[in-house]
Image (cartoon, rainbow, N blue to C red; front, top):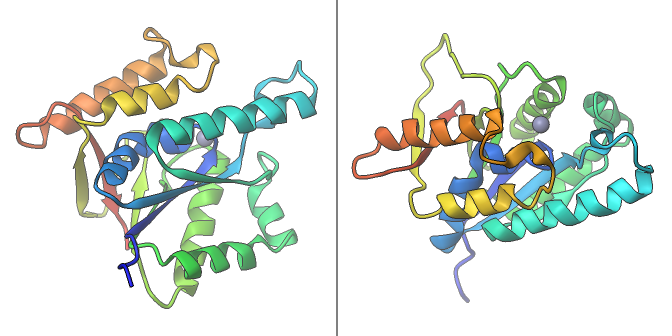
Length: 217
Ligand SMILES: [Zn+2]
């Protein structure tokens, strides 16, 4: 029987977080023959308040799938209400479903949001991931990525640098799956992403672009 592919799971509050935080790493793992599943808690129905919710849903789902496709990963989408992730998670008993997925996939690594991230949805995803982690018998390595905040840990977590020189273009392509103006070359978030990629790349010998994570468990 062929050996099971190594599987990595990326927890993502909104549909573009997994791309911003770990897109290059995801594309890199895919090139190494690994399987990556991104779990998106909400595809962000608040992002286009002038459109009818149904219309927004349809194109948000499509752009999230396109973004995942550009990286080569699978994506599982949930429709949790922004600002209410933790309440919904408890109320609708998502835990059972999430645990089932994690137990069947047996990931070697899980990536999730940082607990220092000021965004309440990102914080909720961090909390949920930790709760799920505690319930797993076979413990994966647990890493955090950052979106807006520069991670400034008081405690010394080991850092993981991933060379994404060969997959930075997939990350950019994936960001462009989101058709809003947010990812054009002069948008601050795009500049921040580029700056971080160069900064982290500088830390890896012979690499131009990188991504970095902290291992918290
Ligand atoms: Zn987000």
